[in-house]
Every structure is written in C-alpha cells, then in structure tokens.
Length: 144
Length: 144
Image (cartoon, rainbow over all chains, first blue to last red; front, side):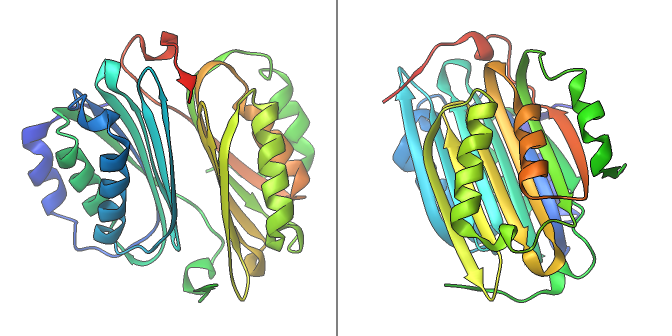
C-alpha cells in the first residue's frame, strides 16, 4: 500500500476533484495526526459535518463516542450513505471511511479536507467501487 | 469481482470463521434480497445488533433513517468501530460494511448472518486490511 506524504496531497487531488462520482467507498488511513485534535470529540463532529458538505452530501444524523483514556468514534449518517472516523490519539492515527452513493458526489474533496483538518503528515487512500445493480443510482428518494 | 451464489456461503465461511481477525474492513454487496425485509427499519436495526454480537463486538449506539418511497440506512457504532447497512428495496440490493478493529473479532460471522437474514441470493464480499500503526490493536480503552 502506498503511503503519501502530505505535500503530495494537492497534486493527487487536483486532477479529478471535479469528476462526478457515483458509488465509491473511500478508505483513508491518516498517520501522524495532531493528537489533540483527534481526541477532541466536538472538533471531530464539526469536521465530519464540514466534510459531508464538501462532498455534496446531506447529514441526517451524527453520533459520536469518547473512549477512555482516549480515542473517539464519530459517524455521520448521510442521505447518500455515511462517513465515519475512528481515532487512536496515542498512535496519532485515524481510520476514516467515506461511502457516497448518488449523483454529483465529491468524496475525495471530503477526504482532502479531513487530511488537512487533522494535520495528518502521512496518509493512504483507497478508492473502492461499490457495485450496485444498474438503476440504483438513478432512483430518486427523499428524506422523511 | 466474483459474485457468489447463496449455496456457496457455508463452504466459503467454514474454513476461517474461527480465526482471530484484527483490523478488517468488510465490504459486502447483497443482491436479490427479500425486498420487504430490507425495507423494514425495525428489522434492520434488530439484525445489525445481532450481527454485532456474532462478531464479538459491543454496540454503543445505533441510528437509522427510513427514506421515501423506500430504502433504509442503519448504522451501529461499536466499541470496535462500526457496521452499516444501506438498502435499495426497489433493486433488492443492500450495501453493508463491517469495520472491526480489535482482538478476537469475527466480522465474517456477522456478514454470513446478514446474507442469510436478508435472504440475499447472491453476494460479493471484499475483505480489506486496514493499516493501523503497530501497537494500535494492543491498546486498551474502555467505554465511557
């Protein structure tokens, strides 16, 4: 698995951030994060909301849990699937997943934002295509 | 991506269901599910709880959302990461992810259970190793 240094982030994202994504699951490992930020539950909730907006997604619910002596999990339920973050401040590590299923989603913008917000000095990003049956992405559904 | 028929499920799981898993992210596509079951929010919450228990995980919170005219998302926040399910009953399709990070996790048992509970006639399962820094899996933390 290739690990990227932070100074490669902008180049790696600049070429495709305007593409239309449909059903992608991004698995993001963030290394050498700021340990105070990734232990701050309120901050993590805030950046998850912001990341969702950057991805063109709608947050319907957001839950989180603080562990002892440290560590946080925060998960946003989106109209278009979900974003989660699990953190281990003692190892400066965060595991993120961003699953977006819909039109005009920009999950890579969300991942770019999270890398920067958590001051990760290294990261690895895997973009996995989910495989819905034909037609799922065109179906219209609304929030109740 | 290989698609499995349901009658291959038991064989495919029987060899490794007793192994100790550490930091795995399972992406499970369920096709030809029972459309009533995957549109039943209460049922989905119930089976997510059961799946977590089978994986040896502890559910700390569980949220869900029903869409109109159909479709459900349910997400369980675990002490050991998360399980989510997103359903499209009109296409008999469900997208599941099971992320477990810890000792003695059995996420494949959870996926086996979900395949059967939703009566998926076909599925595909991808098991992705997450890459925490050394030491993360040995760290002890508790729920507050």
